[in-house]
Length: 65
Image (cartoon, rainbow, N blue to C red; front, side, top):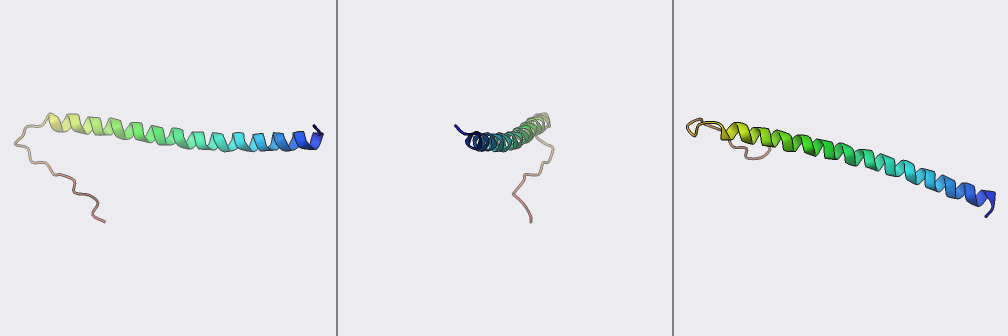
């Protein structure tokens, strides 16, 4: 292979690596956010289950706006 061909292959691989790293960081950020939501939901569930049934609670009906 010529030097030009090798350089083009190297550039493509380098671009692909950069693209994949960016995508990986986005996926890791999403995973982290989802884990946070799961922990928050579990905490909320534990707190609500610990309340007496006579305590009035509000139920979410969706977004208002």
